[in-house]
Image 1 (cartoon, rainbow, N blue to C red):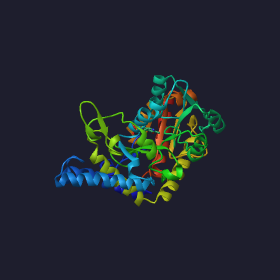
Image 2: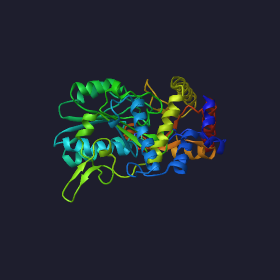
Image 3: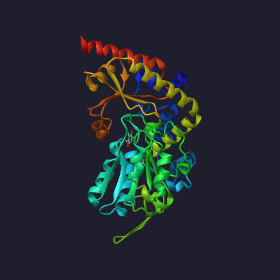
Image 4: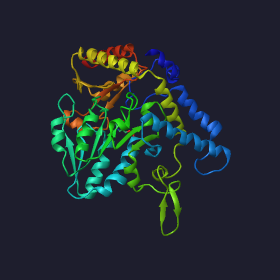
Length: 400
Ligand SMILES: Cc1ncc(COP(=O)(O)O)c(C=O)c1O
């Protein structure tokens, strides 16, 4: 979908840039950048406090975005949309305010081998503090969840299943609806890490039946520092805030504090107002995008990248699950991924080399790192060609 590229001014500023690091963060379309500039130029005021016109308008714009997000995700109530800094903060909030009070010695929390550290460490800490056990669903060598092992691991000690929708390292798309159903048959609540799916799939939280669904704005064309925690109202209402202060109270005296109702209760302090407004425009952008055509384009690009990379001697693709998103991780014999990414960088090809915040997954594959190319609809087949040509040149350099 090359025409979409014209919406992203970064490609005018850097005409030779081939940006293949979209799983880390997407580039920003003009309407998102304009929304941020517009807020600070015309609307800037703190929200939920002032009673002058600017403050009222800023508050209204902020709350309108909550309603937009509710509709976009098909949540039952706008109170189920909590703004956070991003996926990481949303998961920490659930770990501290939902899981910790429910977790006891000997209980279990279930995650998978392919989780991002953001969907691992908060649960690990909670388990350590409570004497509970972090259980890990194994994966297959191609990078799929071992479903039989998953079902065996669900039991009455399991207090939460926390699972990624799409692996940021392997690109595997997990069958989360099926997994949610299995967990809920045993009354186990489920958190879905949607960081890598939110830009590519229409998410219907009521259809999914997820208890929690979390994502970051910056991976779906909005600003950094803004994200969303969707949670079922019955759970959010039962949660005691783990961050407290201004903006989240109904009444305070020196003896006690009465929290405000949802959603304010879980949004202490001045929020990232411009970020929320950028999220509103990012949703508009996605709603105006032909998502079906975008997915088809990304599927074709991913298949093409697989096919071309596999034709290079010494390249090994890590993660070949049948259901894959627009992420291709690979290693090349005898050359460290960081050296490759640095060569690619000199050719203006932005990829990511490293463990991608999934060290236990690297351990499983017995590699220190991979090179990851991750696509967005503005990427083209020529981008893949340039990647492949430069990789071949890199190999020749190291061989020579
Ligand atoms: C699957 C997944 N989960 C969580 C995160 C953390 O997101 P953030 O750093 O925006 O909080 C990422 C970011 O790369 C991710 O890919």
